[in-house]
Length: 502
Image (tube, rainbow, N blue to C red; front, side, top):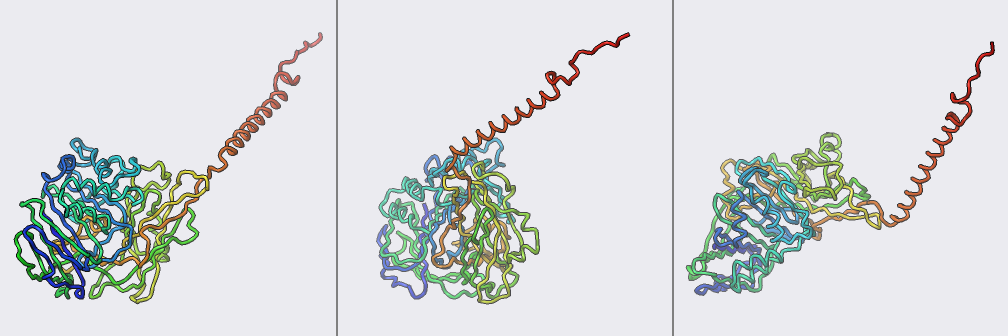
């Protein structure tokens, strides 16, 4: 097991390296205000047997869990995802082919780790997942799955599961701290044979922190770093102290520079539904300014949405140039296919759909502006009140820019890939993320008109009465017609014919 714990703080929040306590197999630090990332790397042999068997049947698996709470980011932890559970899966063979045993195990694994409230939400990749293309040759096309936080039992099941891997006090404490994390990533790539667990926290004050080696073969690294002014445009420059537990007698000063794929943009945004919503709600994005990233040209501003099965886009609406211009939109860059435009929500097997839209910002200024994304609601199950509700996770907004030719983005020790939208761009793409406005909720609720069950009994009786009356009226009309032209009318062809008298 390899562990890397990284604290990143602002320059004014630095600490005295003498306050870092280093003992034979234990390290402690207190009173540090910083963002934190724990990265644990494990071989398959170190995993529980059922997880080891399952992962051995897949090519790649990337699971991302993001909290719904609003949080701040600090370089190099700037990547963003909509709140909820994201799963990206690449099978060894094409889904549905013989030998793909993991296909039947994947949804069971997700349920074990995140406690699905409704087991029918995830059945098999063939039924519940959608196809996700990729423009990057390094990231193969995969299958995508998403669930809102409300469909999960939280991270308690995940914490209980990983407590089976370690038993030391410090390890158990760190797993318990995952409940307050901003994001949790699980990754497995068959070519390396390694699995990793990455947990990230937004900047906060850590009253105390201690870590111990689990076994003598473990490698534990601790870094306390600060962001410095970068030398190159695409890079991050960091300085601070590094310590290897059991090898370092005191923190070693360090300074290094590396390229970064994800950056922070100073603009903020908020989202809301235009009232009244009806069955065709419009999501309005309010963006604080339209300034592109500094010293960058040819950048595009994009919105990436994860739409649960109750909400869907109509790609044909995005083909009208005048309509798009009126909404401050440029183009539809990606939408899950196929999207059934007629199916009710309760008949759907797929998780939903993902949407990438390029926005059309006005000329650069610091004034707020809006963009509108048209959406549609599926029919939901009837309710007594005649209304139901669904929620849409907050979208991710970012400027996408081309990096310099000499940039090697994969050289970052904190590089975060396989986020769904990044595969829709080239390998040399930089992402400048806009943050959510302070207090902006992770999910937007929308009221949906549905069939009311309040008067079901009266409606059933009334319907039966109307049908009976209508059937009686039809019989009465048929009887009347039969009397007028039938055998009993006296005017038909059934009367006696008299012969002619000679």
